[in-house]
Length: 235
Ligand code: MN
Image 1 (cartoon, rainbow, N blue to C red):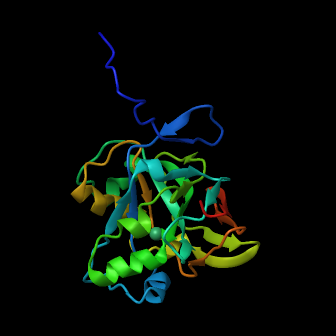
Image 2 (image 1 turned 180 degrees about the horizontal axis):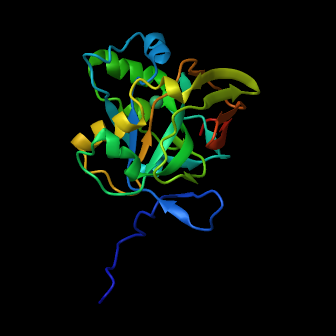
């Protein structure tokens, strides 16, 4: 079979390191759950009533994926660059319309994630009824740690915490997710045929805030691991 000839080098396969393995986890898509901790929904001025709402989602391009430990340039066209510490699910098996009670079968493992956000652009978009892309889906905005393989295991609880320059800014527990891991997989799989390598950032707890060049972000999730990011000078 002849190999296709491309005009330029095609997009690489994006991937994450796997804890304790030489292999890497290839990435398919990046999904993000919005407003999934009550205290964060309230601080954003949009409280959630689970009895009458379903979760909502946005996506980012896999090219935004950035490894833990990186230094990223302060992004362009913002004056309010925010951190959001999140538990990340790695899907390991294809599934569509997955019942919540079977959701664990589709879990490959977990990572720590940072959903970096140009908050000023996001809120302008939100308040004008426009898409969030400029606030969310920008270069180097999806930070992820190595993946801890825990196939079939649902993480029921564990401290989730983020510090800036050693000062704790976010501290909660993943048992405070409004829609839990089973419910997210079940609901998202109503809209998409989930695929191995899909990552789901499950939402951030309260305490989000701005960072500036020179700041160092560190985060951890009990039972999963740690993540860090340094904010560099603007490009
Ligand atoms: Mn988020």
